[in-house]
Length: 280
Length: 267
Picture 1 (cartoon, one colour):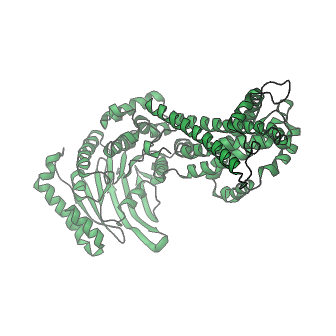
Picture 2 (cartoon, each protein chain N blue to C red; picture 1 turned 90 degrees about the horizontal axis):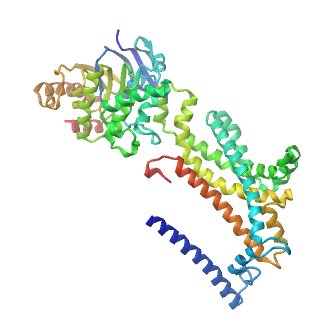
Picture 3 (cartoon, chains in turn cyan, green; picture 1 turned 60 degrees about the horizontal axis):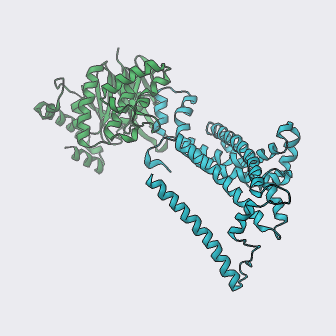
């Protein structure tokens, strides 16, 4: 209890310190008139209170408040990211399981899997939309294609890390299973998968945030207006007049990423049983 | 019928033309406790692995329970204990012991009954729900023994099971192992590099010499049973220890300096 209070205290102090630094930087640069690395004014660096005040005000006349609008868009983007994350994690895991059982497939496929991630997501997103969207049933139209893009960013870390984890099984444990004449299936589920869990979860932590980024970026070429990507694209247009709205949207997007990350950490704590010294 | 029959077994490792075992002949009768002892590189662990079909022999044949070794392995004819306990961190003590039983397709009820019996046997009943990392090294090795014996294999293979433990724990576990062996009557192959441990536990000690790995001699251990902590102080125990040591020394020209040291340390 005391430790939790302490931790909450540290977080609060860090947040206050960050806000302080932001405002201090703003004040020094604005007063001194320094232009390096960029000119500081209320457009390039709006005040923290301006950004938070923006949440309460409507973005457009006769509309609900910005926070209201943003929360709806966040829910939409979260749906895309969650579906993409789920599918990506399953594909990534299955791919790793297949690859660990065949050195030949590993040699043949792994390089292409790596190459797939060197192509910028922004370059692929339009193609995915063109290919995938027409095939989707009506309820999935639009956001389904974005989920596929999020999948694309999610599966890779899962495959690579899980593969490493599956291979990291103690050779003695594998030998022990051999003395039981265990099937590949038993070896997989009773030894390889449990010993890969810490690796899998460190991949899922990466993928959780990557899937949110993938969903936001995926919304741009789709032209979807219901999510955070659309909102960012929109507010970007009006940045010179009302910068605080883009900043406010960014804050919400960051919170969405953090929420995904925290969910994975909580799941990991619940599932992975390890010797205390082995906990990452 | 003998439990283990080793005929003309030779094992060479492809890299570097190392002959780990040369023309090994050995037969184990039911209920025997046979120790394999020798300096490092004498092939004692390799021989154990050949018996368990974890390493195939280059030449020769191994039969276990009258079957070729691979068949015996698939039939679950032996249990094995390694130097490190190889327990699964993510399983409780009870679940670790149940692992081979799950593999054999035993139902939950039957598994639980047997696991409880095994926990009583190694006196770890109150630790059933602990995780391996909550136990001492000696306790972990007792769990490992319970796991190896859980499906009542005819043969127990032990590869320096107490090698990583301190002397006090080792001697206590020696006594425990003997009482388990007397209770179950299984046949044991026990690899060790401790002369006193080999003599104390065994009905026969097989002394091996290195490069190439051969059987230098076999010493019948005629110490009375049941053996107790006092057995180690009897004159007969010292005589037998000396006999084994002399067999090891007679092959001294094959020993490397650090192996000499090992033998000295054992004295």
